[in-house]
Structure formats: structure tokens, C-alpha cells
Amino acid sequence: ATFLSLSLKDESDTRQLAEDLAAILKPGDLLCLSGDLGAGKSTFSRALIRNMAGDPDLEVPSPTFTLVQPYDLPRLPLAHFDLYRLEEPEEIEELGLEEILEDSAALIEWPEMAKDLLPESALWLQFRHGRDEDTRQVEFYSEDPEWEKRISATLE
Ligand code: ADP
Ligand code: MG
Image (cartoon, rainbow, N blue to C red):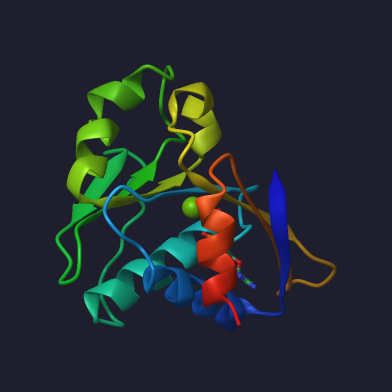
């Protein structure tokens, strides 16, 4: 169920949210980033990965063709998925998500391409365009009640 809806007034709010979540990620955490083209999934992912890398200029390519890009980051490894070009949901198993989550965190853009095969422990963030060009709304939901506790302890 949805447990939080946030208004992001501009891109820096999106980056701040990514940094706030970066601080609490641990092995096994999966963030599923939903939203239309341009909603901010990649902007969020880039900010989160750069923050965890401690490098604001790190190249963070969209793994559109490779489908997954692993990062060996100082605090914990993280895998960045983009499932836009997934041909069938079962392909997610070949990409090794389950093994990755044994010791890493993961972000997935276009998660609905493999929706029924993703773990219920995932936190889903639904990004939507707002009224103005730079505003966004993000809704948080998860089947796992732990996320609501962790998120409310982190965001103010
Ligand atoms: P997606 O990966 O969801 O397709 P991107 O992150 O690639 O989206 O693109 C979002 C675009 O919208 C970028 O050009 C970014 O500069 C712009 N933008 C404007 N306001 C925001 C905001 N509040 N959050 C995220 N991106 C924003
Ligand atoms: Mg994208």
C-alpha cells in the first residue's frame, strides 16, 4: 500500500531524496523506480549512485542495452538495472537479481517489465510529473511494512 507521497519542487529535491535513501541502503534492499519517460528515474539513480560513490562527477550511464550495471561502492555494492528492453519477465532471473541481492542493494528502472518476479521486499517509488516543468510527485509503497518505518525514521 502507498504510505507516503512527496512533492519535489525541482531537480535538487529529487537528488536530495536520492541521497537520503542512499544513507539507509543495506544489502538486500531493492528500490523499484516507476514512472513515465522524463519522470526522473535516472536523475534519482544517478544522484544515489554518485552519493554512495562519493564522486559527484561519476559517469552513470543508463544500462539500457546491458540491462544491468554493477557498482562496487565503498559502503556496499549496488546494481543499477534498466528493464526497458527486457523481452520477457523471466529474463530478470538470468540477470542474477536474486544473487545480487545476497550482498548488494539494487535499483530498477522500468520494473514493471518483470513485476510479478520481483521480491515483495522491494520499495516502489512511483514518480509523476507535477503541475510545472520541474515539479514531481513521488509515491512510496511496499508490501513490506519495514520500509514505512525505515523511511519515516529517515525523512524528517
Ligand atoms: P526518466 O529516467 O524517468 O526517463 P530522467 O531522469 O532521465 O527521467 O529525466 C528527467 C528530466 O527531467 C531531466 O532532464 C531532468 O533534468 C528534468 N527534471 C526537471 N525537474 C526534475 C525533478 N524535479 N526531478 C527529476 N528530474 C527533473
Ligand atoms: Mg531513465
